[in-house]
Length: 195
Image (cartoon, rainbow, N blue to C red; front, side, top):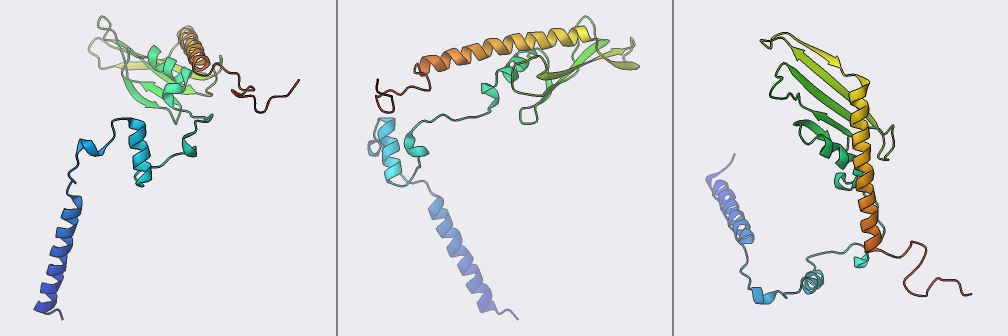
């Protein structure tokens, strides 16, 4: 059986814990003079105080990543379909699906496109494109959906591949400007064969 004394002690403990938690969450007053203006010095200070961390001791290495913004094929697909509303654009799943789209002068006809990525490489068999056409009656009640002809799919595929190869060239040019040294050579004389 719980006594009134136990209830009072329990609530006192809750009040003390709540007050200490509120005090811990209050923002600490700081002055701009406490922080160096140079970002590198701020990073160094934060690391020394244990407020940050470094990966690989700050050395930039050759990393591989597959972000959507770095994939020319993905970027070209989204740019090609930018006039259509998207239902789904799932980079990790490798699929883009548009909503039904129709021009203002043809409300009875609409088109929907789904693009599945079979590879990230820019090549003719990289994309599985399906175009669906929906034709409705004048009052928009009876509609029929059919898969589109191969000409539209081929045009769409060609347009995406052209854009993707252009984006890839830009990425390679940017990398060459940022790192003009070929991968086999080093900046210093270390590691080179002596003639």
